[in-house]
Image (tube, rainbow, N blue to C red):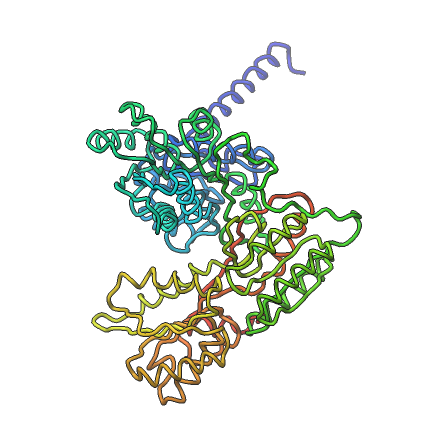
Length: 628
């Protein structure tokens, strides 16, 4: 038997060894806070912020932390780059070294950080949060519609200054940022044809102190200002401080962000330091919710989530049940009764539309949803009539793919007054009040146009010129408007490309053939590129080119949008040059949104589907598994 003293010695020695091992473990963990130190954690998420000087970014991190706290199998590491793009790139590299499973990154300078984001995306999922990144190399973007927020701010400026107008100073964020450009474009578009004028634009780089200094210096020599539009709340606070220093209390300030913190814009509005602000939800909660789906490899992950913005002139109205709230969630009379969805399809004008319709019908059947399907046969009047019929039938949700963007205000007001939420499938609307519809599910048509143009630029040979014929879709329809705008955004700065003709079609093969035949008669071999807004028109154009005696895909580059099976076949044999995918299989996402509404969940303003691109080489591989 072991004596008492010997036993004590062994026990003390064992405790000494245990303490030494624990100390060593703590030292290692402090040097590398990776998964090895997180026994019991399934996922490690890295969050990279460019700075934490903005209350909006602090709120973003708080949302992330709160949402992560609901999941016991997850840990998060935060970094702060202190306003340095180089430091942020180093932070991301360090996070990768810790073995993170997913990166959430918010950007001040998307142009500088795009290569970093693209590099990480090759290895792990990336969620870009709050402010956009150039290109398409990320898993999911969560943010707001910055052009729409800018437009609303411009409309509010007109309302604030009235018919007599006034002079405006615009405080922009970091130069070259897509967020800056979109907010500015929306604002400027809204004040067109008014007596409002922007007399000075400054880049405050999203910073309070820099904005204050710039404004103080400029305003000392320029007192005739009526309103300052600041693209975030830090710069809005800087503007307020500058005006106080110069005793210019009469100047209005409009901000963006809407954070409810000590120096957040909601407090600034409540204290009459800001005339008003527009919320830009941080999106931290949504980022973690989707991160879980991404890490668990759930199907149907969207490419972009666009959150809804509100105008705030009285903080007490934030999130209140008012005219600013979107249509309420459905509430069936009997909880065990199937949900009823009224679906007013625009028509059956193309192979894409046929696939879209089938996807909705099949998804409703699988989800146990009663679907009242109607075909409007390309008539907006009939579509409005069908929506009114659904309202009378008291369906739980109305879904439709609008023929054009405009002309829906009245019928959507009727749906909202009836308490029926409206989901837009595939196409958007342009109405005076965006709370008349609950959510949009579909594509980013503008980005589709950009992707088509980027590919064309990559193919261009030095010294060559590329005259283009554009075949547009239905006039004023969201796909036609977006695909035209996005394409021109990219090519307009390159003199290699010129728009020879832009012809109005209607998404049909017949019209594509007729338009192309007429263009060939006028322009002949001058045409080097055809950019078609959909596959059917492109396939019609191919026939017209062959009839003219030229070789489609060789003599003339042909770019199309949709990437249906028929287009992939044309790609695989070299008659089509490039196709941008527009996902027709929106049914499952639509039915998930319907179910979420029935459970009282809040939907994002827009759910943008993930889509690919196809070359002649990749089309051959994709054909075998293509569903439509």
